[in-house]
Length: 291
Image 1 (tube, rainbow, N blue to C red):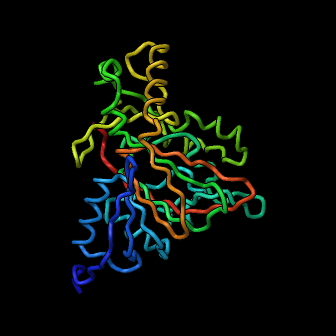
Image 2: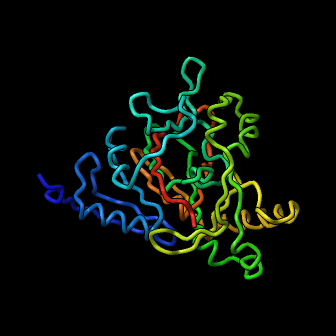
């Protein structure tokens, strides 16, 4: 049966007054998504940068299959936190079983764009709520197109054309100091995440819009700039890029699946009380080499 015979009725509603984001209501991702419906979702994702699919009762296999419609999936370096039957799924969780963490509990502690530390960073990520805390656990998204557009002229002149180093291990030991259960990396894992270089200002490959592409989590230095000046410029960019007017704060509802564009946004996990359980499943879609 052709996919287009599976058209579904659904609404895409932008969040009122927000710098980004829209919710998708009435779409069931456990059913086939027609090509026409998929193209509508793709356009909305480019327009709004974050799509919140409400009330999705889907399996990990269905999440993987829908994610693959957007491109090849990337496997996270922390393989100990992937689902054994679905290695494309990274478990984000603060839950421990038999004294051991079942997932990455401090994911998103610093502002970042997923996998910016890879030569080919991610297009986007999908995060599906499995178990939510009674309080806390919000995720914040910051629009980096707006950040670039509103950057002071002097700072634009200073950073336009520059490149920056991104490194997965930049804050890793800081995180381990806060959370000793965060695993030590093997030499093989360390070799997999060597520093890479990307432009400070990237052009979105699908829309042509420009965006800041640095983050406090993974960006270590500006190339060709004295160390002290590099630090000053990066601190100015980090502070500007997460101003309140650029941010959408997502308060999770049961069975939400959130799909965001890592080429357009930074995100941050607000955290929740340690005694409250939180578990989500993440898939990450490969993107393009930034330019």
